Length: 395
Ligand SMILES: Cc1ncc(COP(=O)(O)O)c(C=O)c1O
Image (cartoon, rainbow, N blue to C red):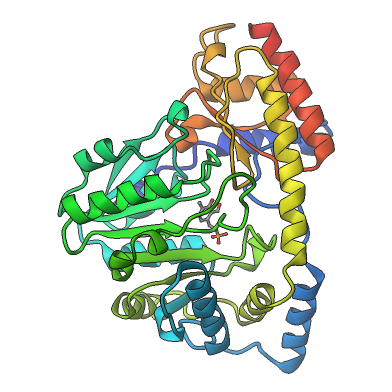
């Protein structure tokens, strides 16, 4: 079958090879420890499940407003105002089937062919792919481990121009765990004012906002309120409430943009699943103790993983401050035993140590690897021990 050029342009996930191999080994009964998952290992909190069951009993299984139920959009608007300041209402919100879907709708509504979108790297690879799918041109801006992955104002100024339609910020970051400090955000805002055009926007992907362990999380809108009508918020329930499979995310932004996104959604997927919307409403308006309990447990694992990785000679690691990933530099181990790159190193670690991790190339950072600590403390400790033993052979 002839596949469309549009879809052939999409890069298949580089990370798939290792995760597929890990799944195969596991199925064959091998004791594989996986640091690959981008999702909490916890179950969805009980109060959320109960709300979903009650909603089903009430008969929610019907279409909702394309942009989401008024109740959920109101709750999202209130939370947005509480976190970021300003005033938002249900009309400024569109709920989609996951934050990734929100980003897809957003870039489709925002970009014309050739419009530039600046993406600081290492980055979640879906950003450049989503931008390209919408006809835009991803402009990758490298950030450095020894600078805490901060966006350098001068280097940003070199790539931002009136052609820039958006700058995508992800704090805490997938994959580095970096959390942007206030000065970095002030610098980015300055560049947008001075180098960008009137249509240059800032997309802040706040999906890991609640998972911060060190330092303070800052809202770009609070730092640059003068840019408020050019800041587009992406958020959702997947990571904070262990609800990846429920598929609810949202975008909050200027009403004309949100309306355009709703038009697109209305002709493609219609509303996000009604029962999931009811669950999401319960998640964000209900008691927050479960979310906090999970955050504290992630932090314990983070500390164990950071200490364990840093104790391995040859591994360097900028301390992750948020999300649930560590992103060590493993380049010291390349070029040995015929291992030429991070993909081969990941495969070798899977064969040798029975540990699955995601090669850094999957995040535009060759030589690195992403390890998720969204797995049990026992797995963190044993997995890092295995990696240390295996890498010891390459030293
Ligand atoms: C940075 C970032 N943004 C957005 C998402 C999408 O989350 P979801 O579509 O599950 O809401 C993810 C998921 O991995 C992510 O890592």
